[in-house]
Picture 1 (cartoon, rainbow, N blue to C red):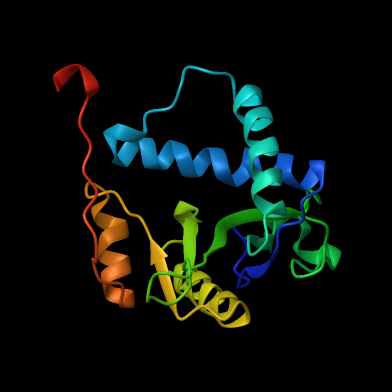
Picture 2 (picture 1 turned 30 degrees about the horizontal axis):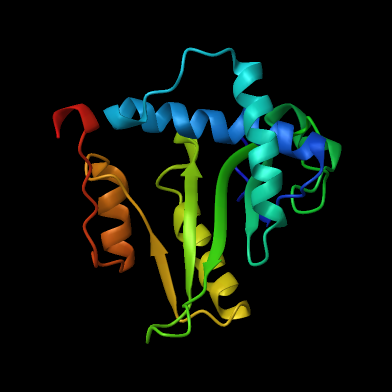
Length: 189
Protein backbone atom coordinates (compact mmCIF):
# COMPACT_ATOMS: atom_id res chain seq x y z
CA UNK A 1 0.00 0.00 0.00
CA UNK A 2 1.36 3.39 -0.97
CA UNK A 3 1.53 5.89 1.88
CA UNK A 4 0.28 8.71 -0.35
CA UNK A 5 -3.18 10.13 0.27
CA UNK A 6 -5.54 8.67 -2.34
CA UNK A 7 -6.80 11.05 -5.01
CA UNK A 8 -10.55 11.17 -5.55
CA UNK A 9 -11.52 11.58 -9.17
CA UNK A 10 -14.47 11.09 -11.50
CA UNK A 11 -15.17 7.63 -12.81
CA UNK A 12 -15.24 7.77 -16.62
CA UNK A 13 -18.07 5.88 -18.31
CA UNK A 14 -15.94 4.20 -20.98
CA UNK A 15 -15.82 0.40 -21.18
CA UNK A 16 -12.25 -0.10 -19.94
CA UNK A 17 -12.64 2.22 -16.94
CA UNK A 18 -15.94 0.62 -15.93
CA UNK A 19 -14.46 -2.88 -16.24
CA UNK A 20 -11.58 -1.91 -13.94
CA UNK A 21 -13.95 -0.22 -11.48
CA UNK A 22 -16.26 -3.25 -11.46
CA UNK A 23 -13.45 -5.76 -10.91
CA UNK A 24 -11.32 -3.78 -8.46
CA UNK A 25 -13.97 -1.93 -6.45
CA UNK A 26 -17.59 -2.91 -7.06
CA UNK A 27 -17.09 -6.66 -6.69
CA UNK A 28 -14.89 -6.41 -3.55
CA UNK A 29 -17.42 -3.94 -2.09
CA UNK A 30 -20.25 -6.38 -2.62
CA UNK A 31 -18.23 -9.32 -1.32
CA UNK A 32 -17.45 -7.34 1.85
CA UNK A 33 -21.12 -6.41 2.14
CA UNK A 34 -22.16 -10.06 1.71
CA UNK A 35 -19.75 -11.01 4.52
CA UNK A 36 -21.29 -8.38 6.82
CA UNK A 37 -24.96 -8.68 5.86
CA UNK A 38 -26.55 -12.04 5.05
CA UNK A 39 -29.20 -10.44 2.83
CA UNK A 40 -26.46 -9.43 0.38
CA UNK A 41 -25.25 -12.90 -0.56
CA UNK A 42 -23.94 -12.97 -4.12
CA UNK A 43 -24.89 -15.39 -6.85
CA UNK A 44 -22.55 -18.28 -7.64
CA UNK A 45 -21.09 -16.60 -10.72
CA UNK A 46 -17.61 -16.21 -12.12
CA UNK A 47 -15.86 -12.90 -11.50
CA UNK A 48 -16.07 -12.16 -15.23
CA UNK A 49 -19.85 -12.54 -15.22
CA UNK A 50 -20.17 -10.12 -12.28
CA UNK A 51 -17.98 -7.60 -14.09
CA UNK A 52 -19.85 -7.97 -17.40
CA UNK A 53 -23.24 -7.52 -15.74
CA UNK A 54 -22.15 -4.51 -13.70
CA UNK A 55 -20.41 -2.61 -16.50
CA UNK A 56 -23.66 -2.11 -18.40
CA UNK A 57 -25.56 -1.26 -15.22
CA UNK A 58 -22.93 1.30 -14.15
CA UNK A 59 -22.81 2.88 -17.62
CA UNK A 60 -26.59 3.30 -17.63
CA UNK A 61 -26.48 4.72 -14.13
CA UNK A 62 -23.76 7.24 -14.99
CA UNK A 63 -25.65 8.38 -18.08
CA UNK A 64 -28.63 9.49 -15.96
CA UNK A 65 -28.79 13.21 -15.27
CA UNK A 66 -27.44 13.99 -11.82
CA UNK A 67 -25.54 10.71 -11.43
CA UNK A 68 -21.82 10.60 -10.79
CA UNK A 69 -19.23 8.04 -9.94
CA UNK A 70 -16.02 8.69 -8.05
CA UNK A 71 -13.02 6.48 -7.36
CA UNK A 72 -10.14 6.89 -4.98
CA UNK A 73 -6.78 5.93 -6.43
CA UNK A 74 -3.24 5.79 -5.17
CA UNK A 75 -0.01 4.78 -6.84
CA UNK A 76 0.89 1.13 -6.42
CA UNK A 77 4.01 0.56 -4.33
CA UNK A 78 5.91 -0.82 -7.31
CA UNK A 79 5.20 2.36 -9.30
CA UNK A 80 5.94 4.96 -6.60
CA UNK A 81 9.04 6.16 -8.45
CA UNK A 82 7.42 6.14 -11.90
CA UNK A 83 5.96 9.63 -11.55
CA UNK A 84 2.36 8.44 -11.95
CA UNK A 85 -0.15 10.97 -10.63
CA UNK A 86 -3.27 9.23 -9.24
CA UNK A 87 -5.28 12.42 -9.78
CA UNK A 88 -4.72 12.44 -13.54
CA UNK A 89 -3.63 8.96 -14.64
CA UNK A 90 -6.14 6.90 -16.60
CA UNK A 91 -8.28 4.77 -14.28
CA UNK A 92 -7.16 1.72 -16.26
CA UNK A 93 -3.45 2.45 -15.58
CA UNK A 94 -2.11 -0.64 -13.82
CA UNK A 95 0.24 1.59 -11.78
CA UNK A 96 -2.85 2.74 -9.86
CA UNK A 97 -4.47 0.96 -6.97
CA UNK A 98 -8.20 1.71 -6.86
CA UNK A 99 -9.02 1.88 -3.15
CA UNK A 100 -12.51 3.33 -2.84
CA UNK A 101 -15.72 4.25 -4.63
CA UNK A 102 -18.62 6.66 -4.31
CA UNK A 103 -21.75 6.65 -6.48
CA UNK A 104 -24.26 9.50 -6.22
CA UNK A 105 -27.53 10.47 -7.89
CA UNK A 106 -30.13 13.19 -7.50
CA UNK A 107 -33.55 12.44 -6.04
CA UNK A 108 -35.66 15.37 -7.23
CA UNK A 109 -38.76 16.19 -5.23
CA UNK A 110 -41.98 15.90 -7.26
CA UNK A 111 -43.97 19.14 -7.45
CA UNK A 112 -46.82 18.24 -5.05
CA UNK A 113 -44.46 17.55 -2.15
CA UNK A 114 -42.72 20.00 0.12
CA UNK A 115 -39.26 18.59 0.65
CA UNK A 116 -35.90 19.54 -0.79
CA UNK A 117 -34.13 17.66 -3.55
CA UNK A 118 -31.71 15.11 -2.13
CA UNK A 119 -28.40 13.74 -3.28
CA UNK A 120 -28.46 9.98 -2.78
CA UNK A 121 -25.28 8.15 -1.89
CA UNK A 122 -25.92 4.86 -3.65
CA UNK A 123 -22.61 3.21 -2.82
CA UNK A 124 -19.65 4.15 -0.70
CA UNK A 125 -16.75 1.77 -0.18
CA UNK A 126 -13.23 2.00 1.17
CA UNK A 127 -10.84 -0.95 0.77
CA UNK A 128 -9.77 -2.47 4.09
CA UNK A 129 -6.21 -1.07 4.15
CA UNK A 130 -7.61 2.48 3.83
CA UNK A 131 -10.35 2.25 6.44
CA UNK A 132 -9.73 4.63 9.31
CA UNK A 133 -7.62 6.96 7.15
CA UNK A 134 -10.32 9.58 6.60
CA UNK A 135 -11.07 8.47 3.04
CA UNK A 136 -14.75 7.75 3.83
CA UNK A 137 -15.02 11.26 5.33
CA UNK A 138 -13.53 12.67 2.13
CA UNK A 139 -16.12 10.74 0.10
CA UNK A 140 -18.91 12.30 2.20
CA UNK A 141 -17.32 15.72 1.60
CA UNK A 142 -17.32 14.92 -2.13
CA UNK A 143 -21.01 14.01 -1.90
CA UNK A 144 -21.72 17.33 -0.15
CA UNK A 145 -19.99 19.13 -3.03
CA UNK A 146 -22.08 17.13 -5.53
CA UNK A 147 -25.22 18.09 -3.60
CA UNK A 148 -24.30 21.76 -3.69
CA UNK A 149 -23.51 21.60 -7.41
CA UNK A 150 -26.94 20.05 -8.07
CA UNK A 151 -28.83 22.41 -5.76
CA UNK A 152 -29.73 19.61 -3.34
CA UNK A 153 -30.35 20.52 0.28
CA UNK A 154 -30.02 17.03 1.79
CA UNK A 155 -27.96 13.85 1.53
CA UNK A 156 -29.69 10.48 1.76
CA UNK A 157 -28.47 6.90 1.85
CA UNK A 158 -29.68 3.44 2.74
CA UNK A 159 -27.73 1.29 5.15
CA UNK A 160 -28.45 -2.24 6.30
CA UNK A 161 -29.29 -2.52 9.99
CA UNK A 162 -26.84 -5.43 10.26
CA UNK A 163 -23.96 -3.33 8.92
CA UNK A 164 -22.91 -1.95 12.30
CA UNK A 165 -19.59 -0.53 11.10
CA UNK A 166 -21.27 1.50 8.35
CA UNK A 167 -24.10 2.64 10.63
CA UNK A 168 -21.62 3.86 13.24
CA UNK A 169 -19.72 5.82 10.58
CA UNK A 170 -22.85 7.43 9.15
CA UNK A 171 -24.16 8.38 12.60
CA UNK A 172 -20.78 9.84 13.55
CA UNK A 173 -20.81 11.81 10.30
CA UNK A 174 -24.22 13.32 11.15
CA UNK A 175 -26.75 11.18 9.27
CA UNK A 176 -30.00 10.53 11.12
CA UNK A 177 -32.65 7.86 10.57
CA UNK A 178 -35.79 9.22 8.95
CA UNK A 179 -37.52 6.17 7.54
CA UNK A 180 -37.65 2.47 8.28
CA UNK A 181 -37.83 -0.03 5.43
CA UNK A 182 -39.26 -3.46 6.10
CA UNK A 183 -39.29 -6.65 4.04
CA UNK A 184 -41.19 -9.93 4.15
CA UNK A 185 -40.89 -13.13 2.13
CA UNK A 186 -43.93 -13.52 -0.15
CA UNK A 187 -44.34 -17.21 0.70
CA UNK A 188 -44.68 -16.26 4.38
CA UNK A 189 -47.53 -13.79 3.81
